[in-house]
Length: 124
Image (cartoon, rainbow, N blue to C red; front, side, top):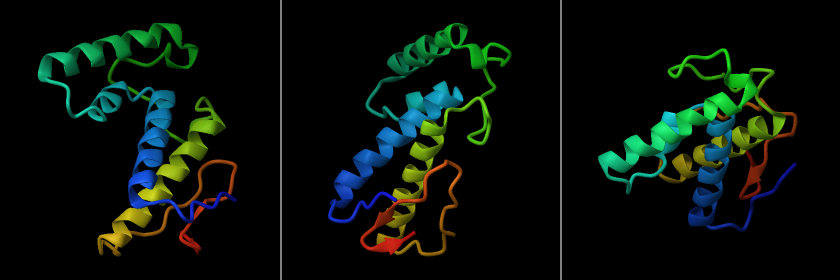
């Protein structure tokens, strides 16, 4: 089990974004990946989505999907590494939301093969 104790909220947010990026790429959520770059103008955003969508032809697990479709995180075609990254992202987001008093969220459940990490000595 990973322990993320001792990291600042800013460091946790950076790790969360990196994990989200990996998970979304492995699920084929290319338009959503482009949303992770809010500083792009409309034209740059469109170009990024177009280039990422072109990757579909190179990745066998996306061959049978339309441009608007993507894999679910639980799909056997999504690598376990991406599911574990998704879990880390959810745990960190849950932790950060709790710090902002959004305590109504349910704790995340693991979809990867590893136990959920802990943040600040609390098993989320």
